Length: 557
Image (tube, rainbow, N blue to C red; front, side, top):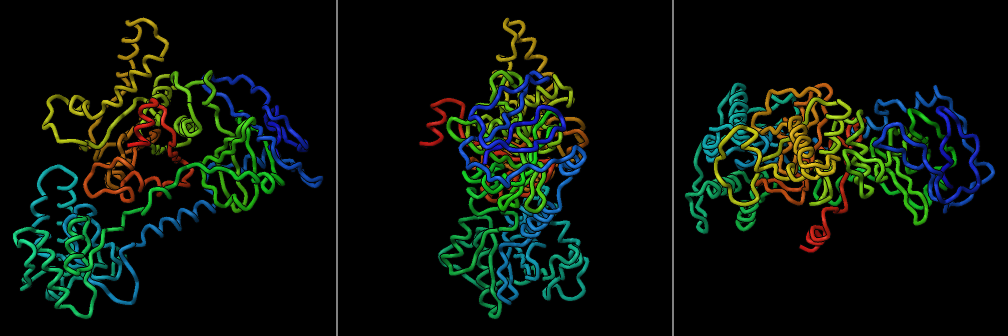
């Protein structure tokens, strides 16, 4: 069934649906704001003619206001609650009725300082070599050093609960509100175990010998080594020892199932979901209320779409979901070349969706994933400049990224904080050059003046100095976010004060941080945790727009 025509006046109600609609949408009215128009409100015409019983029920302006409240509906909150509980369930734990003994490698503690409390009723064992390596990593201002010191403080707090001999174990349930009910064991005596195939001087091999010794001495329990080091797990397998990765902060096993932020509607969607269709105008936007069996799978701020050759596409943003009823709103048409954001318009569907999130004042947190050349940085900078310099919504733009090198490190860099960060943010300079070229200043003097003005509103900050800060009315861009751990991502996002918007950009296929994978990256973590929150949105960019060479290289290499 085709969508009805858009109402012509604010608050008007559609009483009937015509049997047929033209395949071309009527020309949209001129928008008041010069940089955006509203998407056409016509669904492709190739659909079954509705039955005589099909009608659109009237809806008053008061009812419309009540049905599209910004607050998250109960269904969404329930989904978020179930998602959170699912994430807290540790994948390392297979409940077969046995209490296991988990031996933690040092890299697990350095990766997640709270990992000791992530194994529920099972016991934790720390070899003496693990404590020695923690001591070696505690000095410095890096995240690894901070994590090492946090683990040491946690262990000190646990030791305060020691009531008997340390070799009997220390209860873990006092420092974590009962989430971990097992006991912590620390190595108190050496194991007379030799591994002839491995040199005994290396720390990893000494930990493996401890696991072998525990396996021989504790016959009635499963002893499991937990390590982020793949080679460590391979050596354990060669020695017939059970070894696992640390799964607690790993959101997904396959990046292909990561939430994309979009949903293509099936061809017969309107046959079922158009029966009780309601429509109204609010704030110059066209809204629809849809009911049907597919609606419960919608998420707030997800983009639903349907395209058919020769017909106007249907692009809408989900605003609320309650049971089998959803309220959606047609998106702003940034695909129209006459309506741009800082001289830039969307070139494909996902870019149009991304600009709707970036320009929405009700969205506080945006994540954009995509391969090289999909326009993540360019669109984000264009939206940030428009809202900072034209709309005055933000005071300035703050840009940061993880300083993880693809090649060999080039050593210490001289200069101020911004000068030290400049080599890491070359992509920002490239995109600013494109935006400045399209700003309309034809002369060289005009372009230089415009570039100086733009750069005066942009601040480059290092992640090393983010702790303790609060950003008020800032547009914050976190570039290369796939290289951040979940803890680092939490540290950055919690810097946001009132009026601040945070945008995370990245490509999870290009992770350079050791021990991070597509499933455990901080970017994957926040995409999964924030989905469905009414003030956040995510888009996975599909098509490259940089150049035909870059597109072919991304696919072929």
